[in-house]
Image 1 (spheres, rainbow, N blue to C red):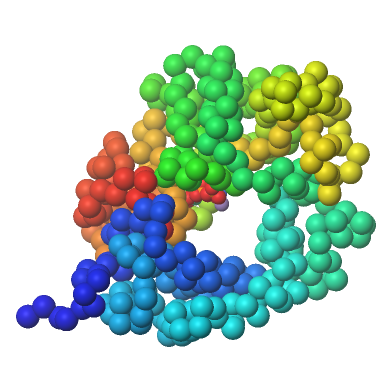
Image 2 (cartoon, helix red, strand yellow):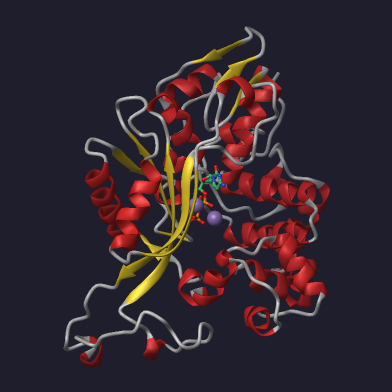
Length: 388
Ligand code: CTP
Ligand code: MN
Ligand code: MN
Ligand code: MN
């Protein structure tokens, strides 16, 4: 006989890649709280705890209704004891004391502000915190040696922490399209990341570039970067060459977090649409200097006619395009669970480059995302439902 589940959700599966997770869901109060705990665990470099809280949040995003009482969660997977206690407290009292304490804590607030600097990860932020730094401006004034990414991160801190809109992403897309066509006619660009999943805003814009003829894409990135730089469109860029070799980077190694495509982490200088004279009389025709005096705490009235926007460009050979597209569409938890599913349930190794079957000892060669899901024995989940 069927086990008796809560009336609401008979069959939520344990891997995010087995579930449909839309962007809009019904439990934001709970998922926001769990996200704070996940971030805090990450700041304490406790990856396991962080993933556990993220998994708990992700499963709540897949529920078709709001949770009102603990019985609504019967049969729902991925909820550890700690997450359940937090959920219970919020359902009963409206807030969780633990979450409120974290939000108030000096460490969480400082780590949040410092890791919001482009180029500053948890390790650096943690070292700075222990040295007494609390705010991004402290990093400027402390005499710490900053690398180029961190300098740009501080210089454009406000813009880079203002969400990128879909309209801005589309404008960037037109520029990238023009650049790519100019240096390699016939190349194709695809918007990936959160915008492909239907998000209305993002922290950056992600593009995947390929060419229908294998090999034509080699060395494309430096040419695209030169084209953009010659037009003053890049405020920062770091380009990596492709270092993927199937023979050495394939199944023998554990799946890498970082893929090995030719890629560019960049900051674009995006012209703002001209404001109409009635709305902003002083903004029209006003030449703005490219260098800003004070990188932090710029007031809105000083806003120049452009915005700094983080853009990730990735070049894939067409033979790996389906893997690259799947790998760069996210969400990060969806990707993590795809790889975990492949390894634990199918004895396969999935990366953004390839799929290896350890039972047959051979690479599988799917040509589309749909074929990859099928080979993994998964129902196809469209990008708009990968928002785990
Ligand atoms: N990714 C990756 N390797 C990296 C960075 C990102 O493979 N070094 C992949 C991740 O799997 C992620 C996707 O690229 O799912 C997009 O990453 P990111 O831009 O960080 O996140 P988004 O989902 O696009 O969300 P946001 O709106 O915050 O940009
Ligand atoms: Mn993104
Ligand atoms: Mn992100
Ligand atoms: Mn990105």
